[in-house]
Image (cartoon, rainbow, N blue to C red; front, side):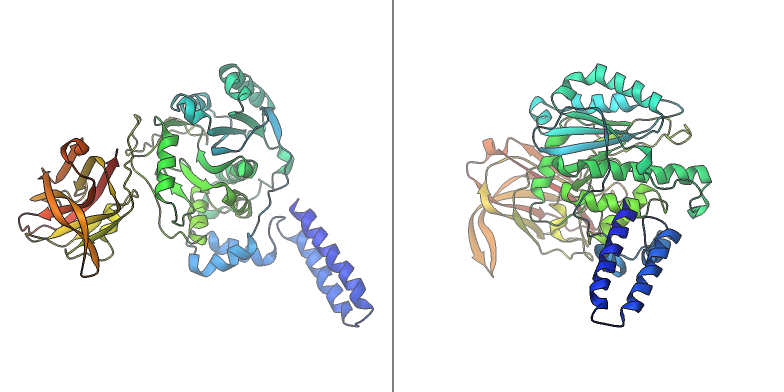
Length: 478
């Protein structure tokens, strides 16, 4: 299809050249240039022109400079339309309406083990009835072995017929004829030929899956076919997305492993699909995704903890080799993501580098870090609107810096906002309690405090020589 559109473009140019010829003798040079371009289409790879191949060669070093290439990438990949692929619907009921979230899975035949059915089961079992109304699951059976596909479809239909009928589950296949060349590819990183073929085809598998899902929902999350989900993962995802309203992001990560739990806006899927096709033979998909995020100006990883998805497969889809990777941040039981209503944060502590106060209040995996605090130092949260608090939890220190905790401190709540030195702050505080072993947690705050809360204040009650990390401040409202 790429060649078809390139040819169509060339003939359009030729048609314009014929009109120009009546007015100019220079057209011969134009026709010559177009002919050279025409020859180039057959000399070079069908997915890229010569100018693009230089970008690909540099990308293969796995050291892509985002600032250097972001303009070029936007020019090359301003694809608003989907790739022209005729999919085979192996098991599906027409989608009646657009959902909130599409969960995409791509699966091929494994030499050992098969976890696809368990993965699908986990998605549905860990979702409530109300959550099921807002999700659709798309499974791309990407293996070219039709016997395997037929057997898998039969198993899926037997176990999940009611989800298929309800339009929550679709099983598709992109025919082999749409795939690019998968043999004789470049052996970047000195990978063996079969490894290069496997990961290159996997990139195309994902590209066709993303392409199919571009208009099925508002958001899209990619899973692998050997994953276990946490309970009510959709509710957790929705809460995170709501907390980031007004913030620019390309990818949100709900697992630190591979291509598991990576969330996108659905409007970015066509561009991501084209990107994977453009660089399909260069590197593994998880490396490409890092570049995609950077090229669209999201410089830092935005990952949430605990993880919502866990790798459960024991044997890899590549050659059946052992793969014991586990996400140690995963929690299977439902976890309650804090509400953390809008607020401003201030501190008079000496902040280290860019570990600002706001990072302790973020749902992202980051924290506040300050130099040794003194008695009387404070860390203050001022809410935009007064709130009724159900629960407060503050954690200090990290696993690798377990002594950078608040050794002696207390937590106060305040009311009656005043403006002092151009800063909004409370003029009356009530002490809730002290920190113990660097942490503070209190439930049923609304039953202990007779007023709506405007401020929370963390106070240092004794000077310490250790630095201070405030890892997280979590607020649940009633």
